[in-house]
Image 1 (cartoon, rainbow, N blue to C red):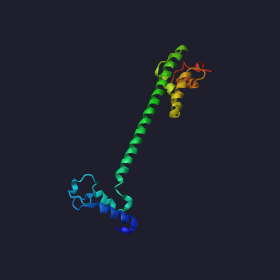
Image 2 (image 1 turned 45 degrees about the vertical axis):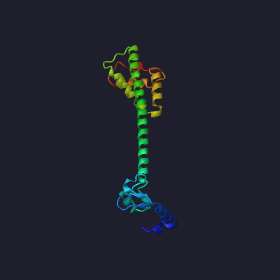
Image 3 (image 1 turned 180 degrees about the horizontal axis):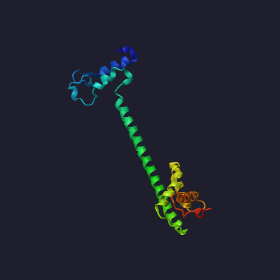
Image 4 (image 1 turned 30 degrees about the horizontal axis):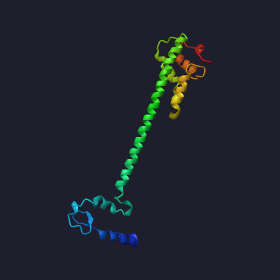
Length: 187
């Protein structure tokens, strides 16, 4: 490696550095110039390691001195991303659970409304199945708006404002519940 590549300033800095520190041959430690003890016992200064030798052959742009910092930063960034992912996943799960609870409340209300209209189903699970089919597209709402949307669906369920009631009746009929028909529609 030629020192001319670095210019006069770098050579001066290197000379100043070497004037302050000595590199020992046996332990490969860097200690202050004039230090009389064993270089391996001098812990205030960093140790010249073999990975520094390996990277030195690639030139100044691949210095391993900064790699641990870069790795720590990358680890910190990965940790931050993982933390953010966990936070978002927990938030999505909370919203999904709330929507599932609202859907379950609509199933209970559907049972009551059908009973009030004189409809008895052979399989009570058909109410849940039909409602899930009628609400299929509602689960595709943007996650940030989904809980509010399901809250409004729950509030309007079985009323003229509830636009899913008639498709719900159609789905019940499609599941073989022929006692349910157009007279059960909400206008």
